[in-house]
Amino acid sequence: MIKLFRNIAGRVFAVYGLLLFVATMLIVLIPIWIFSFLPDPAKTRNFLILGRIWMKVYMTLIFCPVYRKGKQYFEKGKVYVVVCNHNSFVDVLVATPGIPGTNKTLAKHDLVKVPIFGMMYKIGGIIVNRNDDLSRKQSFEHMRNALKMGMHMALFPEGTRNRTPFPLKRFYDGAFALAIETQTPIIPSLIFHTRKILVPDKFFFALPHRIDYHFLPPVETKGLTKEDLPALKEKIFMMMWDHYLTNGGVEPTPA
Image (tube, rainbow, N blue to C red; front, side):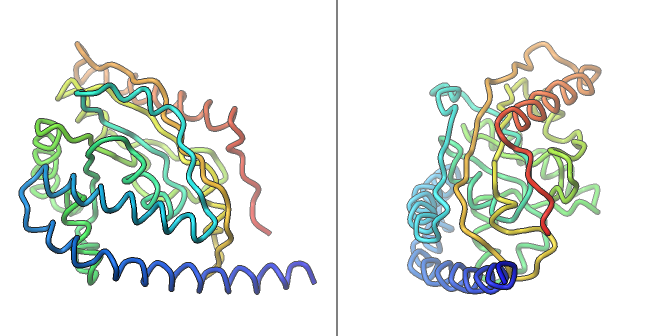
């Protein structure tokens, strides 16, 4: 009986969350469209100002408040490569507006084709086709330029959502290669509990839950070279793994 009630409640809440997302998105759509004509970094900065208000209202209305810890690690006037774990689609709604300052992220080219969302990804993201060598090279250059313009780069080094029972999937090299080549410090970050909102392996099912977003102390890359990449990647991986486990990040396998 309890399981049946939970399944019904999860579907009802998913409908509520989706309808509310669409309704709030329609309110901010025209200003976002206007911002799309601005040059960077003004385009991204204004998009994020509005996006933070939008997500603050939306996450509150769906009973998923976001609490951030470690914002003091972002030193004014400095840019960072921010790496984050990835458990759920909800992470995107948390990470981009949650990172202090203006930031860009990396977005798959398929997302650009999605109506409305495509426009938002073009503003807040750098588009890449991972199956195209030229596109990957161009995206790397765009990320370098974003850092030069004073914008952080927010990247998910796991590449895709972590559907394993482990705290993290293995990391790809991209974020760490960017940080070393540009000599930009890395801020590891972790989002907690988003798998409890969008439960894995359950179609159109969601439940409200508090979200915690933790930023860890920055890791310097000055003086590092390509030969240091594996060690840097392993260091960040273990920092995030340990922090996830010591802060209640072990999530039960859904029934």
